[in-house]
Image (cartoon, rainbow, N blue to C red):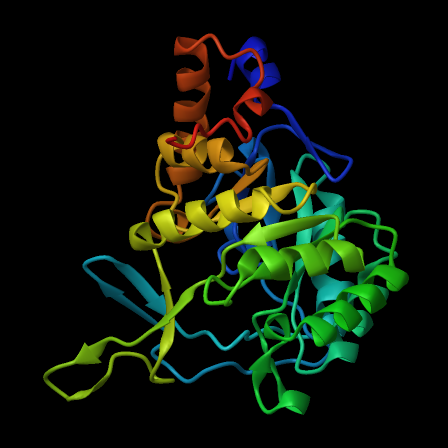
Length: 312
């Protein structure tokens, strides 16, 4: 990419400089090394790693992924090798690859203290730039209710994670929350440096031949193109309520999708399903974004953030 175009795409979010606003979403980048040589990781603004929990998680039974006409369903079950393995094996690999983009670690847990354990355990690694707290997980101590659906629990979770690190914290919210703007405001008040919008939507796809769910777990999360307008609306609503940077995610497959998210109020935009289908998609999306900015004489992509004009 030309130096002038590269300069146009630089953004700052939560005091971190990103070479461009395009990230790989959690669950699609693994921990970096798995995609090395498949995706041009160096061209990205950053990656959000696969989930990390205190202990290893086997995850959901196979099959874990099922496609349908409007996108993709997944029920991975937050499978991951656990904190110790990620800290001793995956983070050193990232540290050795100095040309890798920014690294945001996705954090999950079954209880509030799990999030603090992971953040404390990884906060000392200089290669990690920020954490993304996935509060759409089920809280086993609250009967399976999502952490993000209870403001008191969410406040405690974010506050405790905040005390565990000086690195920026992004809180990832579900689109099914009754008032996603109010929840985002509570997270920011508790110490979040940014908000990620959105997680997947619960859904069900049936194999009509077997009359069974297409996924081994039964239900799963809907992602892909159909999630785009849901994510954009959530970003717009939250941008009106908080003064922290937003990561827009859901349904991104073209440069124009990134522009929509940014106009709605996002500073960073993550690509998920599109990258799974086509590992070259992130590079193409970045190129399309740069070309659009050039055609429209945009001097900095940050000029687009929050420029949506609502009809009167």
